[in-house]
Length: 209
Image (cartoon, rainbow, N blue to C red; front, top):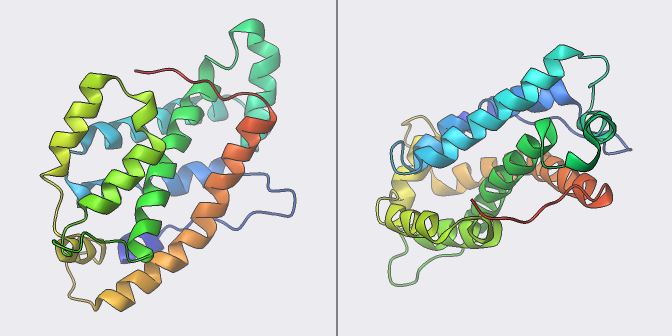
């Protein structure tokens, strides 16, 4: 679990504004987590996270003072792009990024809640499937949905996944899950705040890729 705790997300201030730079820095360390699920099979999700982080960072780097928070990025782009917004720029990239982050959030919470396949308790398909169906499935075409179903059969065993999170160290499951719980505190608050921001600004769009 050291993999996730090394780069935790920051606590949010009272106004729940997400600072852009520390958010992007923490998110940049999430792709190795996807590798624990399967470096080849889950590569599309990892690639999507990296690409969208890069797009948001490119906008932030043009004026860090102006884009100190994620909300400031959306507000500026809304005025800049007019009727094209929110289907453009960092707003669109962050929209897809938050969905991938929600996938991670739901998956880890499912592990923490002890949800298992009673017939195959050492598999994580139940947890990954729940996360996918609640976060990404509705935005994926039939072809991408089939690709994901195939990926499920290559998902690691629960024990191997938890060991990978601990960078190969043998740790007790209870100890690892306690660290998952600790990581999820700030991570979940951040993801929830971004979703709230999109809903408040009517920036959420619903289409398939």
